[in-house]
Length: 165
Image (cartoon, rainbow, N blue to C red; front, side):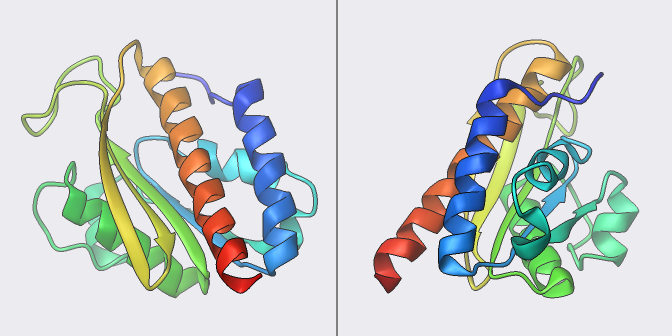
């Protein structure tokens, strides 16, 4: 599987950069399924050093449990995604966070079919979780997940901008 950063993701990251600069928001990510692809995309955006606090790639379950404070148990769940987001926001001192966990495939895991993704996003104090289902090979699932995560983050920043303006 290769890093999946498509032109759509790059454009979303540039728009996130603009909004983050306007709102002075600190943004963090926490990734399992995507292995750092969301962070790589954000880090390549203009001015990232002023708004991107960092990322935690918690691929192993033990990292999720030990570092992030995720309750031991299944990790392809809404609860795990939410706990990952809260842990990363706390550790990386972020205002906004996005976290993903799921099954890239090609085989099912934890009783979930390939392409199952849990995406947690929002303000560090008010994270929401979505269950998504993507189709395709693992690299396609990763790219779709990156785009969904960046879109959610952009929406969150737009809501913050509207609330403060």
